[in-house]
Every structure is written in C-alpha cells, then in structure tokens.
Length: 352
Image 1 (cartoon, rainbow, N blue to C red):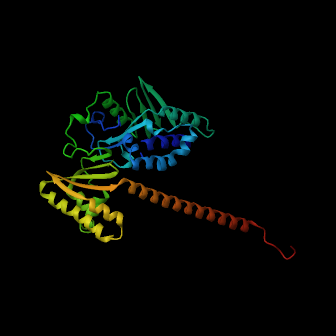
Image 2: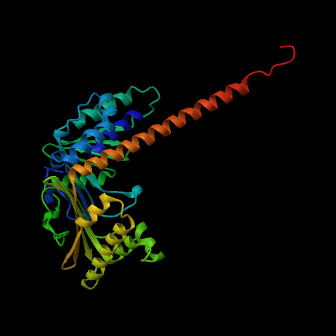
Image 3: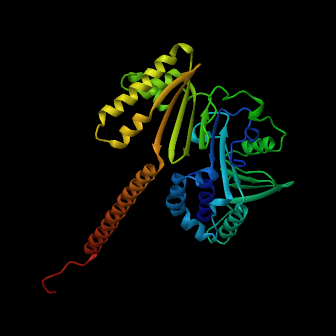
C-alpha cells in the first residue's frame, strides 16, 4: 500500500506543485466553474521557474524517482490544467487534472502494482488496472483514478464519473469551454504568462466570507470577496520582471469604485506598516489599480532575480527549521529511551 501511495505522490505533483503548453479551452468542460492552468514549458524558461524546478521540486521528488527507477525529465512535462464544475469540500471534490506529458507514467503505475503485489501483508490489491477499448484506467481503492488514452493528456481525479466526462470532452463528444462565454469578461492574460487561475464565483461559505461578519474594517480581504463575483489571477515573467495580474469582477457597476478604494487602501496600509521592508515597498510602488466595466484589475511587478533570492532565502530558512525540529525530536527520543532503560534496571541492594 505504501508503494502505491508513493507512486501517486510522484504523479500528482506533476499534477502540482494541459494540453500543449498554452491553455486550450477545447479541452476543458463547458460547465467548468473554475480553471487552473500551469504552462510548464514557459515556467521552465523563466528564472523563477528554473529555481523552483531544480531546487524545490527535484529535491522533493528525488527519492521517489530513485525508488521507482524513473527519470523525471521536466522537458517532457509540458503543461497541467485542473478544472471543476463546483466548489465541493475535499471529501466530495470532483475536479480533474489534465497532464500533458511525454513521460511514461503508466510504467510508474505498473511498477507500483508490481511492488504492491510483492508485499507480504497485502490482502487485496490496492490498485486496479482496467482496459476499455483504447483507454486504460488505474484506480486506487476507488479514491483516485488515472486514465490514459492515445493522443490525449493524462486525466487524474477522485471521481471515476468526472474522469469519464473529461475523456468525452477530449474526444470531442462532450461540450467544451470554447463553446461558452464563461470567463470572457476577464481581460486577456498578459503574455508570456505561465500560471492562470480563474473562478466564476467565490464560495459563499469561504472562511474569508464568514469572517466578514466580524466587521469589514477589520477584514478588508473579506470585504473584497463580498463585493466581488469571480476573479482571475495571472502570473508570468517578462524581461526579467515577474508580474502578477489580479482581476476581480464586481457584483455590480455601483461597487467598482468601492472595490478600487479598498484595494488601494490595503496597498497603502501594507506599505505604511512596514516602512523598513524594501521588498514590500518596491512591490507597493509597482502596484497599479484600474477598472474596465465591472472588472477591477491590480497589476504588480517585481524583479525576477530578486524573487529568486527571496525564494532561496525562505527555502534555506525552512530547511534549517526542519533540521532543528528533527534534531530536537531525535534528542527527545534518545532521552525517553534512556529514562526507560534506567527505570527497567533492577534496584541495587546493600548486598550488591
């Protein structure tokens, strides 16, 4: 069972942290309420992406790739796209992930099945492999499914029904997002972007929305959610400049100005509260807030080389903290073992 979990842990981060690098609406279901797209080809060509892949992802996935004798060549991973038609909780999540890759992921899953079959305590196969026509599907105790078909992206998800519907869209038998006007209100993503996330509406029971009852002045983020009806975030890198574009759709034209004021107030507050933070000051100075129709857009920019330095610094701090925690845990274990052995020693008598 552990081997199967390792296999899925290997595949689904590819599926972290599509279709032919750019987002192709023809491969997204027409009823999608949210879409997240990562263009790995473009990410890999940026300074930030190069650092994330070589210093973060490779480090995390290294042990898994060695265990399954699997060469994780990022040049063969082109893009990832996730979408869903609702805002379910984790237990009822029915979104799917499309992985556009030349990697032989079926080889990894087959190796997982083989390893699982060799486990002595394995009472029933945790992973099943089925074939229907030219489509091969792997299932992990009916909790996770991965589907392969010729000439199409790999499909992964928690629901077999969702996997099958996504397959129908890819084969042209199901309606796709290109046939609708969903998300069309948002501005066209600035090129060259490597990440795009868009949502038709925010969850009414989100934590931020619930927090708004405590007072909008104390929670400006919650106030933004109350005023907005959907949003889009775009992240990219151009000419050594990392950029982020955040677009929010106002619930009505009457609140556009109010949304702009709230966003500008948040930027000013963050800047004034940390005058000594040069990185934050530089980011705040780059901020531009504008509106068009019911859409309010915030644009931010930051030098990519400085972003890499920040990532490196934060990663080193995380590794140092993790190492200290592990050392502390080891010392505690040794101390408890020493106390236990002392307690088990027979008491000495006067004769001894």
